[in-house]
Image (cartoon, rainbow, N blue to C red; front, side, top):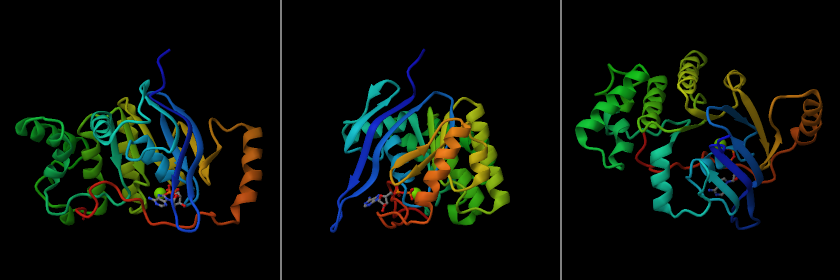
Length: 265
Ligand code: ADP
Ligand code: MG
């Protein structure tokens, strides 16, 4: 049997704070098999984005081991992580994070520019990715000229242009109305059907419903996982009652900053 695509053991992520340290991830174990479609849920501040950023090699854990495709990536330096990310991982954000002064095609080409692919090949691949998401007629527009749903499609094309093995999306339908969200969901489903491993962070029940497996975080730990069994449902309901009415001791924070923010639209 092949090793899991992602294997996390005892992952912790702490952030220094003036008053007291924040434990965004308090010991997470997770194995993701190739070809899975996972929904990651949990209240605001429970560590969903942090976990996605760790899996996406945007953040390094303070403790624990992360193996990607069997290789220990827990201690890679920035360059090595960027390289890995560029080769294997696509990321989609709630707020799209397209660069506003560049065209849609240029936005989608951007990840390839770091990979030493020449300009004509970049263009061809970007146009192909844009066709996959149904944006072939919008390639020369700027992000501001597109609807939210179209911008998210462009962001998905950008995430897919490098043909990643793992696609990570942080509340990708959070800024979209229901009908638009359905179209985006359909895209994720198609990407998954094509063989890509997908992890979606979501508050949306309908999004979670398309997943093969659901994971729920609370205060930096999983509170339930795997196929729901009656015993498990009981346990999580009890846990839910305990944590349901309380706010996270870590407080609130605005959406995590992705790389390159500031240029986004
Ligand atoms: P979620 O995505 O589930 O809303 P996050 O992963 O964004 O949760 O955050 C988990 C906890 O970690 C929160 O308490 C948040 O305030 C804290 N946190 C996350 N990133 C940072 C950071 N860069 N600096 C300080 N605290 C952070
Ligand atoms: Mg978040």
